[in-house]
Image 1 (tube, rainbow over the protein chains, first blue to last red):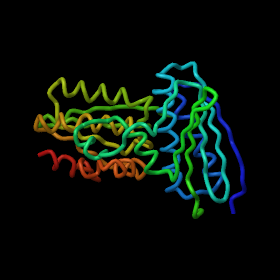
Image 2 (image 1 turned 60 degrees about the horizontal axis):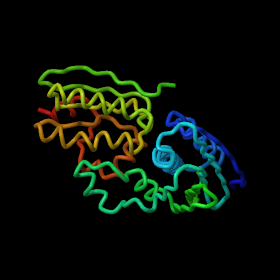
Image 3 (image 1 turned 60 degrees about the vertical axis):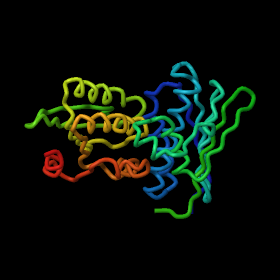
Length: 143
Length: 115
């Protein structure tokens, strides 16, 4: 039985911190005793989300901050990412016809496509000058 | 911690073995992309990419493969992927790349696919 807990990490908007962020998420997943198949998906989705924040909301400016809040309950694993970069709603990026676009050699939108594919919910809002992105994976089994 | 490392070896018949180690994310993919472009500039289009040393790949890394396969095949070459680890293979499957790329378990199979 998973006990509810929360963890937090704040990083600069620097792509070199993606590795550290993935490590942070992996440690939480192992603490929560989740299945390996869930681990890979959650790490991937978080990494894609953070990459998008750094590239699109901060436009690769390394001086921004990204607040990563993870909440684990017996029902769900939730990652809430907050930043005060440019307003960027990943929901506005098309991920339809991804297979067609890949075959044409087009690479845009892959990260958002993967986030939506592997997580059960992806929610975005912009309030008080901050972008809020929430990724949720519902938990059904433990390893 | 190995961020990302590339080793290359030229093989007979203009085949290049590219051995990757570490992780391919939005921070490290640029070096891989530059390497592939340099090979294409040398008219080397038959590439064997040994992925056995890659522990993680994101869409940025996968994007390099997506951008390169068309060029390789238009020039009568190909990109063969060797021994991806399960999390890496999973990303390829999610993006449908397992239908576009030849993915094999051995160097022998990779070389056979290019001849």
